[in-house]
Image 1: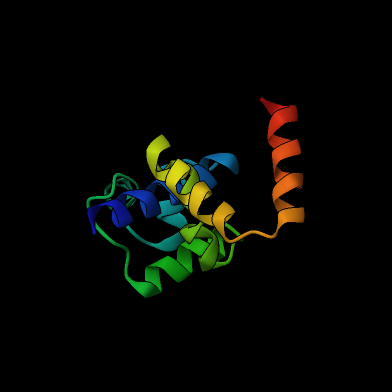
Image 2: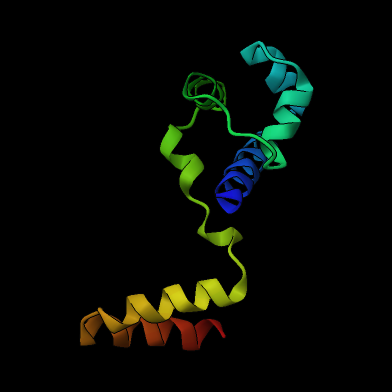
Length: 105
């Protein structure tokens, strides 16, 4: 569970920073103390659904975007996920993915 809180907080922080909004500004926009935003972003607490909805509205994102956290996983977790996905991929897609990886790496 702690990883879920951590990743959710990191994702909210990432989106907030991409938009150039400071913690204090977001806190004011949604009507909470800035230390509450800090606790959420550090993974010390979950926001309520109501608060999560307000954050999403003020950041102009759907709530679901906060759950896109795979890029925060450690390297081994990502490799396991990729390998598992590749095992269930068609041969054609597998070859395309291989070509893409080969070109990038």
